[in-house]
Amino acid sequence: MHILLANPRGFCAGVNMAIECLEQAIQIFGSEIYVYHEIVHNKHVVERFTGQGVTFVDSVDEVPSGSILLYSAHGVSPEVREASKTRNLQTIDATCPLVTKVHMEAIRYAREGYHIILIGHEGHDEVIGTMGEAPESISLVETPEEVEDLPFDADAKIAYLTQTTLSVAEASAVIDRLKRRYPQIVSPPKEDICYATTNRQDAVATLVPRSDVVIVLGSQNSSNSRRLMEIGQAAEKPAYLIDGVEELRDDWFEGVGNVLITAGASAPEVDVQQCIDYLVARFDATFEDVTIREEHVYFPLPRELRSLQAES
Image (tube, rainbow, N blue to C red; front, side, top):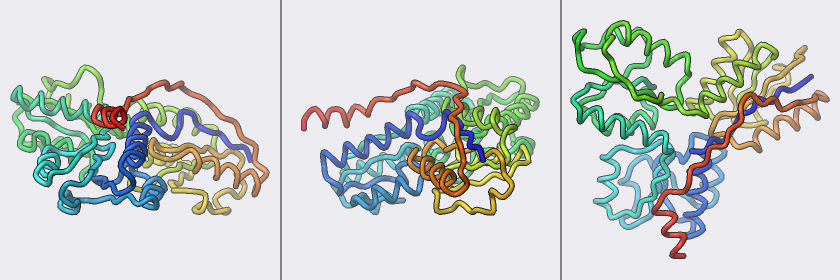
C-alpha cells in the first residue's frame, strides 16, 4: 500500500485564527468562556475545548449576563450581536475575515438596491449569518434547478454571493444558470469561495486519478470536508469522511494499492498522522507528501483580543 498525502490539507488561516482566539481567551479569562455555535466544524476540536471547560451554545439566551462570548469562525448575524449587547456580554469576534468579506458585500449590495442570490447550503452557520445581514434582500439557492424558481423579472437588479466553503464545480453550475437567466447579474470582483477550499479541492482532484480509495479527515457537518469526499465519489472512487483513526475499517483497503488522504480546513493534522500511523503499522504502507500548491496566508487575532493581551 502507498499513501498519497494531499497538500494543502487541514487547517486554513481562518481556522487557525479562530482556534488561537479561543486559546488566548482561555489564557486571559480562564475556561469559563462561551462560544456561539462550534468554534469550527470539527468534533475533535470542539471536544478538546469542552474538556477544558468551554461551553458551546446555540442561543445567546444560554449565556449568563455579563459573560464572555466568542463568535465562531463562521460568523453571526446582526441579530446575534444585538442580543449580546442586550445581555451585556463581552464579545470576541473570531469570524474568518473571508466570511466577513461576504457579509460586507451583502450589506453593500442591499444598500445599493440589489436583490442578492446567495449560493449556499440551507442551515449552515455561515449562510444563516450572511442572510441575517439583509434578510429582506437575500434569497438562498442550492442547485441550478432552484434558479428557475426565482420570482424575479428578467431585467431585475440582482447580484450573487457564495458561501465560502462550496465546491467550486457546484457553485459554478449555479452561477452559469444564473447568468443565463439574468445576464445583467453582478458579483464581487473577487470570488467568495475561499482560497483554502479551492486549494484543497484542487489537490484532491489532481491526485484522485492515482488513488484507489480516498480518506478525508473531517466532521460530517463540515461543508468543505464533505466537498472533498464528493470529489472522490464523482471520480467513482470509494471515498470516506471520518473524524479520526477509530473510524477506519480494514475492509476498505482490501486489494488497495494507493490511498489518498486529505483533511478538511477544520481538521487537525494529528488526526491525519494517526491514520497514517495505523496504515503503516497495519498494512506496511509507505507514504509521500504531494504538494499541489503552497499556502502562506495568515490572519491576525481580532483587535479586541490583541488589546486584552496588551492589558494582561
